[in-house]
Length: 228
Image (spheres, rainbow, N blue to C red):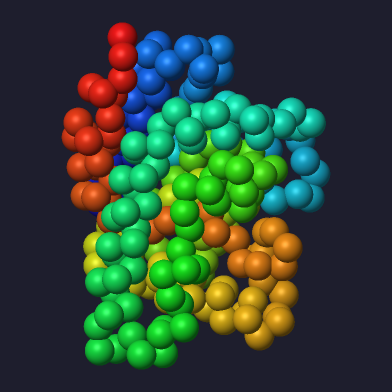
């Protein structure tokens, strides 16, 4: 199981690195940005004393450490990779529609499409403008619901876009339930994961492992459409 997960991590890392290397060569607007992809990325590299320093399964830089900020670079990168980001958002919306349209989802009916993120939540109206990385990707295969809750918090807090990758349908549904729980807490005025003007963070998307793999491996991410 661990070997399978590690192989998937490395494959996604390599696909992302290839994608952004090619995108940077073809797009002069982001040519000067140092785009790195790391597995098991440690959010805080220096000695932070008692400050918790999570490890992210896969992270796409540039990495904001200490006082460094890359807000403008992240916005430029999201705009440059609009086709990829739109594909990810479309799959997320499809997953939402599939899960929340089933019989057992009546308690989730308040989670309508308007609460889902759009491209603007990662660019001009970024939900996480003070991100530590561009993409924070957490992959969950067999962890408990508490582990999954931690995955969501880390991805939302650290990435301009937080991507939760579910190994199967059960984990996918669990992630959506947790996301709905945060929305309920926010609506009830409880302390919760909030980012901008008191509203719940809108920088999380939830996919399955096969969906993420297929999007990154396919031509649909749009590199073939870019001018040389």
